Image (cartoon, rainbow, N blue to C red; front, side):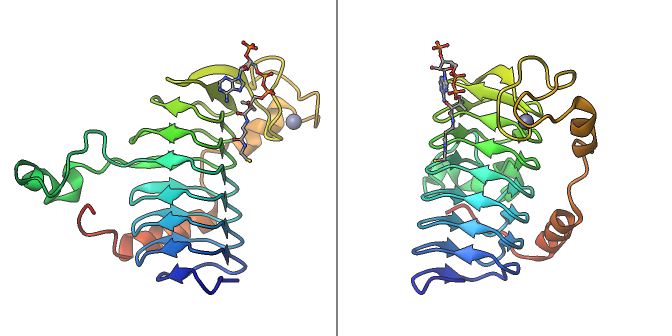
Length: 214
Ligand SMILES: CC(C)(COP(=O)(O)OP(=O)(O)OC[C@H]1O[C@@H](n2cnc3c(N)ncnc32)[C@H](O)[C@@H]1OP(=O)(O)O)[C@@H](O)C(=O)NCCC(=O)NCCS
Ligand SMILES: [Zn+2]
């Protein structure tokens, strides 16, 4: 389903839904069964796996890689330049002439949640099934199954893959809510992205990321 007001300039996977006023640029890679809600912007060079939900008003820039089953809350903010200046400023033109000079990747691992209005500074990895609280400003990598909140975001608890907080460390604590065991988490935490995400990454290397910073 692609809403009549959406602009989709890349191929999207089967069952992916694109809602009103969303714009997917050429060179983006988007998997199957994804939901892009109203007013989402996906830049060339972004990679989104399968079963991902991206809520309203989120921009997914070049260099942002979102694995399968991730949830991104409304108004969450990704970034890809740690020390931006206006690329149009004369003295900044040399830096922005080459993507490698300024672009830092962001990796959101399988099953993670990014809360509404959270900001992720560039160059970070948010671990598998990690949980970023609403409004957090994330300045460091987040470990798998870890809840971070605040500005700057700090780890405050372990979380289960069901989203509930655990009474102890995710490596040794069963979930009181869904019964998930640490052994089951270890199996989920294989460190290898799904085959569909790897396919998406491969096709991304052949597609065109945004040639210059906008
Ligand atoms: C992180 C979160 C899951 C915690 O929920 P919770 O279990 O009800 O919160 P807790 O009761 O465990 O909170 C514990 C403490 O952390 C604080 N806290 C909770 N969420 C916080 C957040 N996002 N930022 C800062 N502090 C937070 C609480 O105020 C509380 O502080 P206190 O101990 O000083 O009173 C929740 O607050 C959150 O951010 N959810 C994401 C919501 C969202 O973005 N949804 C998007 C889809 S609409
Ligand atoms: Zn659980």
